[in-house]
Image (cartoon, rainbow, N blue to C red; front, side, top):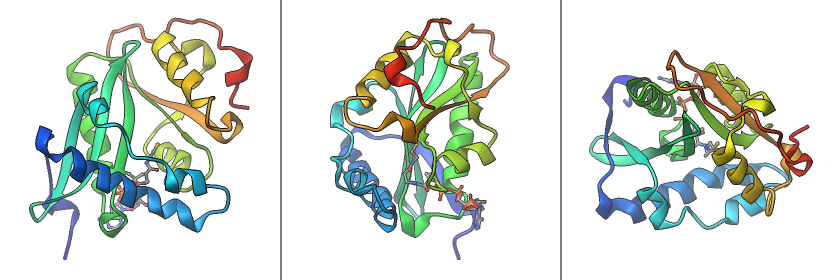
Length: 188
Ligand SMILES: CC(C)(COP(=O)(O)OP(=O)(O)OC[C@H]1O[C@@H](n2cnc3c(N)ncnc32)[C@H](O)[C@@H]1OP(=O)(O)O)[C@@H](O)C(=O)NCCC(=O)NCCS
């Protein structure tokens, strides 16, 4: 039986990019059960070079990779670019362990918060992060880096279905730049 305890986290290896992209494809397949998310199911997985832009932690069960998180410091916070767990390994705390690894790394780097953007509705998106202590990030705390990501998302996503969440940490870095967001990025 798979338990929380036999999940093993380790650093990413450059030769496993395609394995992680396959995990993303598989993780995204769960959106097929919902109306209106076909584009998410069909979307190409993350470009290989994105793994160079941050740090990736891989989760293994019995020696086989089943999930990962890609994080990168951004605007003084730790931004979660991707967190993916295969459906077959889901619901056993693998995602929670990956999230805990992000929090440890952000704390180690003295960052002020963890930040991410996600869909509001599927229970494994906004609701899952909220259960883990995330809340909506005030717009005046969204810094230049995150605003640029949101602008890119606005070119292919309906931003009214999205939310930007954060979990504040004790780090001293000031975080966002208190700028105004373009109204096109308003997330309702
Ligand atoms: C979001 C995601 C990474 C979560 O991964 P996960 O491994 O399923 O997460 P967890 O197992 O930690 O938590 C899932 C549920 O299992 C429960 N759980 C935790 N440990 C458990 C255990 N030992 N046994 C049974 N259930 C457990 C959790 O309480 C949680 O319950 P919930 O469904 O009521 O929220 C995963 O759903 C995923 O890959 N989704 C698709 C990609 C995606 O949307 N990523 C987020 C993009 S912003």
